[in-house]
Amino acid sequence: MDPAQQLTLYHFPHSLCSQKVRLALAEKGVRYATRVVNIGPAHENYEPWYMRLNPRGVVPTLVHDGEPIVDSARIVRYIDEHLPGPPLQPEDPDAHAEMEDWIQRQDRFPMRELSYSSGSSFVLPLARGTILRRARVLEAHRRRNPALDAAYRARIADVQQWRRTVSSPEAIAELRAQLTDLLEALELQLADGRSFIAGERYSLADVVWTVFLARVRFLRGDGAFTSTMPRVRAYWERVRARPSFARADIRERVKPTELLPIVLPFLLPRVGAALLVLGLLGYSVWALVS
Ligand SMILES: N[C@@H](CCC(=O)N[C@@H](CS)C(=O)NCC(=O)O)C(=O)O
Image (tube, rainbow, N blue to C red; front, side, top):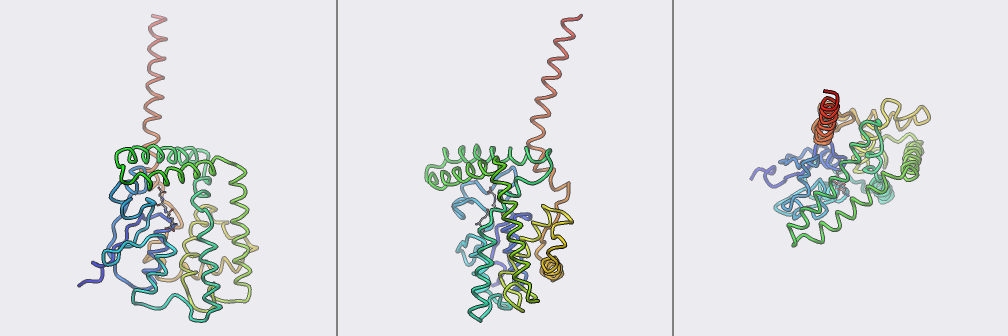
């Protein structure tokens, strides 16, 4: 049987966690089938069929021989331990512990919250508007699917927390400071001249940090890795030059055309409502003066 038929990745092109899994699969050189789950305004990830596969309603999910595996940090370990290809975990226990530590540092950082708090003053309210809309979509699904009540309630609570964080300037300032600390810690980790995070061999820690740095690059632009972080910058160039980076379609930029389908569902009703109000006002003025 074709191995690609036994392995299906449910993912979304721009999602950070999906990219980590795609990169691990590209490093292993494994073939797999894909199914895009639209986490944009369509919120396909909240539909009951997907919530049954991944009860948190998030991408990615890897299905191997009919078994769903969720959570990107777990999935990349699973890929390394169950699929053919070059090993991505060091055998040396110290290096292995370092790899684990750096996977967890990345995993604990709430990049989602930071991503929804960065951007122009034009895009930000729209991004925040999408969080509100999520709660409404989830609530509608919850009412129609009592068997999934607990999963939907948990997700609604998560979305409310997400909204509270992105609405708090103090929380966001704290996240920005944490991100700088993380990058400085990486600079220190690379200070002995090592090529990769856990030593001379590329590991799962590099898989997750490649994608994380691509997101930092996207959020902070060209000056993402300052002159005080020469080793991080060189590391970024090194991991980015690997063939797996292109093969896994790692995104460090978003094309404006890709933003349109995200922004339009919010813009169109508002522009429509504004035009209607203007039209009514114009008509009232015309009726009064004529
Ligand atoms: N801990 C999970 C987090 C997954 C996650 O938050 N996925 C995001 C994309 S990176 C998602 O599906 N967001 C859509 C949503 O929350 O509605 C993992 O690492 O897989």
